[in-house]
Length: 311
Image (cartoon, rainbow, N blue to C red; front, side, top):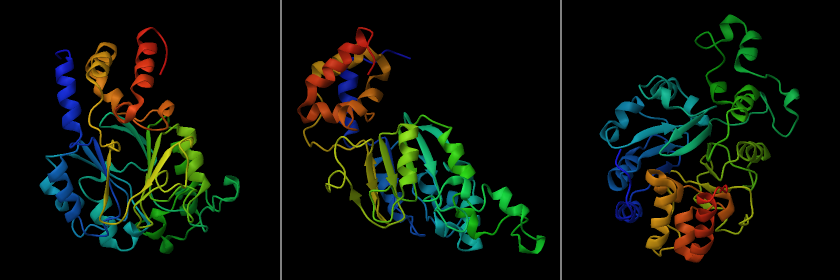
C-alpha cells in the first residue's frame, strides 16, 4: 500500500463530509425504501439496521439494489418475531450472518457491539439481579418445554427476540468496543434501561445508538446528558437515519497542518484516527473537535502519541 500523503488526507477529509463511514437506520417496519435511497445518496462504507426490520421479502432481496454499494449489518427487534414471515425473511435470509446480536465486529474501522431484542420480564427483568432471571439462556428455557410447546423444536418464536442473561453476559465479555447498537434504549430515555448503560460502560464505547422508540433524539443536544457522560447516545426514528461521524460544526475540515501531523503520526491510518470518537474529546471525533476550535488539544494529543504517549 502506498503511504498516505497529506494532500490525499485533505481530499479524503473533504470527501468524508458527504460520505459517512456508518449510517444507522431506525426501525424500518417493512419499508426499506428510505434505506436504499440514503445509501444511494451517501454511499457509506456500512449500514446498521436497528431492529424491527420486518422485511416483506428475504432481506437480501429487499436490499438487493445496494448490496454492491455498502456492507449491511443489523440487530433484530421485538417485532422481527411477530410472524413466521417476519422471522424467516430476516433470520432465513442470505444476510442472516450479519446479525450483530451478542458480538463485536469491526465495521468501517469501528468495533461495533450489538444487542438485539428487548427485555421481557418473563425471561429476565434487568432491574432484578441477573441470578433471579427465570431463564439464563434460551437452551435452559427449551429444556423446560414439552415437545408440543416448542416452535421448530426450540423456544417459542416470540421469545427468540427476548434478551437472555447469557446473551448479555457473552457480549459483556466480548469487548472492548467503540460503538454499541441496541434495540432497547439506555437509561436516559424514560423507557430505557440501566443495564444498557452498564453494558456500554463495560465495553468502553463512546457511542450508543438505539431504535425501538420511534424518536430522533440526540441526548446531549437535548440537554439530557452532559459532555462528561461516559458515552454519547442517540435514538433513531422509524424511516430516519443517523450518519457517523457527524459534521456537527459546519466548519469544514481540520487545519492542514493538523492533517499533516496526523499523517506523520499514523500514516495510512490517519483518517481512521481523526474520524473515531475519543473519550478525551467528550466523545467527539478529533476531526470534528479540531474543526470546532479545538485544534490545539488535538495537536497536543498527536504530539504526545508521536513522542511515546497514549491517546
